[in-house]
Image (cartoon, rainbow, N blue to C red; front, side, top):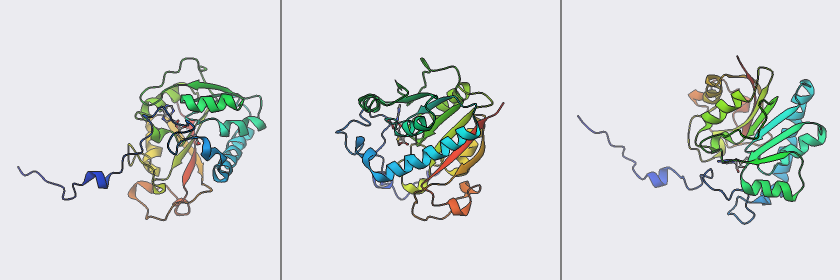
Length: 238
Ligand SMILES: C[S@@+](CC[C@H](N)C(=O)[O-])C[C@H]1O[C@@H](n2cnc3c(N)ncnc32)[C@H](O)[C@@H]1O
């Protein structure tokens, strides 16, 4: 029996893994290295939240039964405030880490903020039994157990509910715990195995470098290959 050795064994150089943030409780702390509030003042982020809120407000307009919203990994809540400006009567719940809540409270944001560690489990205590819309924007790729999150989102929704996800394109050079899971086809498959079916998706206002299409992206139209992220709308299926 021969052991096959991989020639390139400088894994430190091959895998840049310093930036995993899910274990850090200091996310959104004002002084934390590069992860503080400052990005919220950036016009690029502001444009992005404007665009996202327009997509979600459109979904709510077309589905007026949407009265309750749960946003996981919301950050301090910039997106929620834009949505609540258009639809102030929504019941809007947000979940993230302590410093995100601090910013939310310091700015008198509307909605109800819950601090929970969603890294490996999702304790739903304090939340409603069901929501009409769940949002996870650029969040699932940050947690160690995305399956347990999606399983619980399934339990917190019904067949009239929507699940809105911003899924980053691997071309934007994120650091992934589960590389490949978030490739376009694989991600749709992952959601399908958790009983969520894709209705459709929107492209992004931001672009990535242009790398060739993978075998795990057969469902992704060529024109969307360099979208920084894809905004996917899923339905809970029986
Ligand atoms: C890339 S940011 C996205 C924030 C926001 N949804 C947006 O689009 O701007 C990922 C978010 O997930 C949150 N997050 C990461 N790990 C978490 C955990 N274990 N528990 C709760 N929130 C977590 C972070 O605090 C952060 O706000």
